[in-house]
Amino acid sequence: MGIKWDALFQNEKKQFEKMTEAEKFIYFLLLQYGSPYKWGEENPEGSDCSGAVCLALYAATGHLIRTTADDLYKRVFTVQKPGAGTIRAVFYIKNGVATHVAGLVDDECILNSQEGGAKVRNLERISGWFWNQGSSTAIRGLDRAALIKLAKEGKTRYGLDPELTKYIEVAP
Image 1 (cartoon, helix red, strand yellow):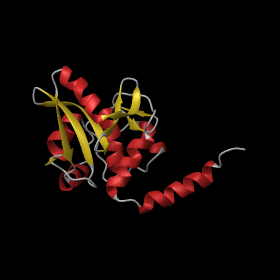
Image 2 (cartoon, helix red, strand yellow):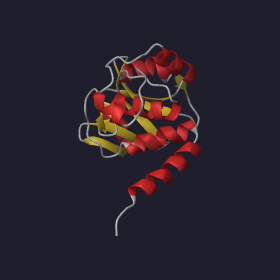
Image 3 (spheres, one colour):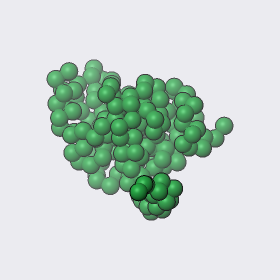
């Protein structure tokens, strides 16, 4: 007995196509579960914190950006008090700079990509850890217009890692 991967992923594709953007964002966050932490990368084989969020944003919206946690906080996730059903991220801020970002899976869980790999973690517990390090927590919603603007500008601060092209089509 074995898993029929082709059939399984064809079913996944059908389900994915029916999802809302917020559901697609969460799905792609969770697809990264267990992948190792790789600084400056953004693919299912490994990513850093902002790479995991940027990859999930692209999968959900079709708009590709690659930038830092701080840039996401200040320019892309600017909607304060976002409601459920929207694309949301959690930022950890120290001295006015977002030093870490995690995608919000639901009101109590995040996909946290940092040393040790990408794991679903309890929001309150991780926020407490960052609080003890002198950081505050902010939950923000996606400003879609800002995302589109940055994508049109070709906002890829780090450049895209070559492994990404194994998983998504990237325009030249």
